[in-house]
Image (cartoon, rainbow, N blue to C red):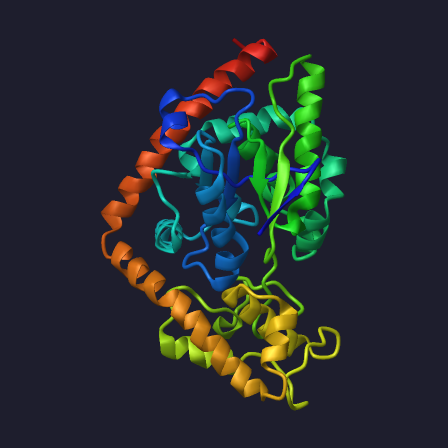
Length: 361
């Protein structure tokens, strides 16, 4: 299920063949955009919170609505450069994961952010409408900048929301699939769109709507008060889509719980068990009340094993497809090149219009 939040935006979208071939979209056409950082093999947090909602968009978007999905490798550098040995493999693994989970590269324009130079060009233009003071007040910046000593904060971290806004506005995005933790960045995005339109007396940029999935913040298996993330040094904190059946069961059984006894749903005093119930509800597409009633009187171990079973059942065809794709990396590169070719048509057309509006051309 997807929830539309008016007045905020975020990038996650698909572009159909018809829209891509024309290189344009009419003013009353929905344009969906989204992006995901290339962190390597996707985990079930990526799957439930981002990929599955995108598949829903892909299947239900209005006919003719462009859908653009970007592997945002520039954003992966916001806190420092990525090791050369990992950069390309991370991109390929993420691309293979998206395709294995059901992203259709004909229905969705799947492309690599850094291959479209207009993203950074528009970010520079939008930067003239933004202030350092406002960027320093962004919650994510304040949180992540604490990790750097003596003010040695990378410029990319400060400028991240401006590049994010450029990602969306370059394609005149109207709907952005993003988590609730990005709401402040989306508010900044809509401000930039309005400020550009106001300064240049135009209505060129639409004001995008933020679209958030039901399971936007899947929690860590080992620390249920934090989001599931690749940044966690423990591999037991997450289940990756490539994990074997044995590994899925191992990680579920080792997930943080308690020794209280039977299964009950109490997020405050039993966050670990509540997290397992949320995951089970997400994978079985049921309500928390329904799954809690199912496990009433059962042990936590029974819940863990049943969760492992449903997760493995969902992942089994995905991991087969994933490993097959990764064994043909040239195919992955071709798919990204195809998406880049389609995206750049739209990007160049819109950038030409932007430069005309700004008096640069």
